[in-house]
Length: 404
Image 1 (spheres, rainbow, N blue to C red):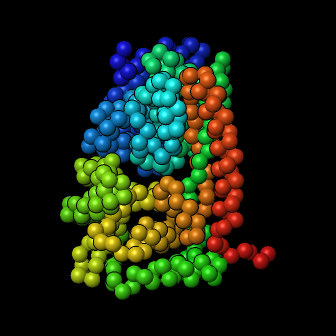
Image 2 (image 1 turned 180 degrees about the vertical axis):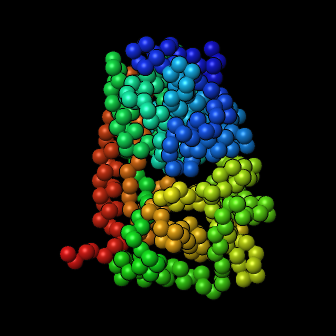
C-alpha cells in the first residue's frame, strides 16, 4: 500500500466515538480549525507557517518531508490535530538519530521511512497535538492517537515515529502507557534561552553580570564601532520586496559558506509568511556607512517570546553574528517586554552571553524489539549525561551571585 494512503482501524466506540483521518496537505483542513485546536501562541504551529512550507515546495515528498497530518474526529467534528510527516532522512529535525539509522543500516534493516511529528526545520518547543478544550477526557484522545500510529508502523513498514520538541506537559502525556501498550521512549536534550528578569535597559542586563563577563560583552560589541553599522528592525508588514530579496541573498550566502548548500528554505517561503503572518515576523537589517544592507536576520515573535531563526551576511566582520543574532535580540526583548529569547538550537557559547540551559523533550516509538531495547538504554544514559551537562553549564552562567 502507498504509505501516503494510510488507513487505521477505527478506535473502540468507548473512546468518545472517535475516528482518525490522515491528510496529505495542511490546506485540507481549515486554517481557523487548525489554529483554534492548537491554541498556541507559538507562531510555528500556525496553519499559515505550515502552509507556506508546503506551498513553497520546501516541504514535499521530493525534499523528504511528505505531509501526512493527523485529524481526529468526533462524529463529523474535528477535535484534534497533529502535524505529521513521512521522513526518508533525518535532516532538518535537530534531534539527532543518525546513529540509530546507521546501526539499522549495518544490520541491513531499513530505518527509513519513519513518521515524525515536528515543525520542519524548526527546533522550537511547541504543541504537537491540539485537542479541543471542551473534550473532558483528552487522555483518551492521546491513547487513540498512540495506538493508531503504533499500528500504522507495523502495518505500513515504518521503523518508528517521533514527536520532537514537545512542551513538558505533552511530553509527560506522550510518555504515559496507553492501555495494553508500553510508553514511548523519552529523550532529553538542551537549548539555551535568555530570560528577561525585568530589565529596563540593556545596561540593566549588563549590570546583572560579573564584571569580567560584562567587560567581555562590551569589548565584543565595541569591535563593530569602526564599521559604523546601523541596525534596524522592520515589521514584516513594512518590509519591501527588495528587503526580502536582500535578506534571502544574505541567508543563502551564509548557509552555503557554512554547510555547502543554499539552505532548506526558498524565497517563496519567506515571501509567503511575510504576507500571511506579518504580525509574528521581524526583519533585522544591518546597514553599512553608505546605507547598503550588508547583513540581515529573521526573527519571529509571540506575546511572550522572541525567536531568532535565520541570519546571513554579505561581509565578514568579526562580532557581527553575535550582535545581529544575540545582542540585538536581547535589546528587542527588553524594549518590548518579552520574557524569553530563544536564539536557536545548540551553542554553549551562548552561556557566556547570559543564555541559560533549558531542557527540551522528545518521544520516540521504535518497532524493532532489539533496537528498541538498545535505543532505550541509550536514551537513559544520554539523559543522565544531559542533566550533568546542564548542571555544569548552569554553574558557569555569568550572572553575579545575589549576596542575600
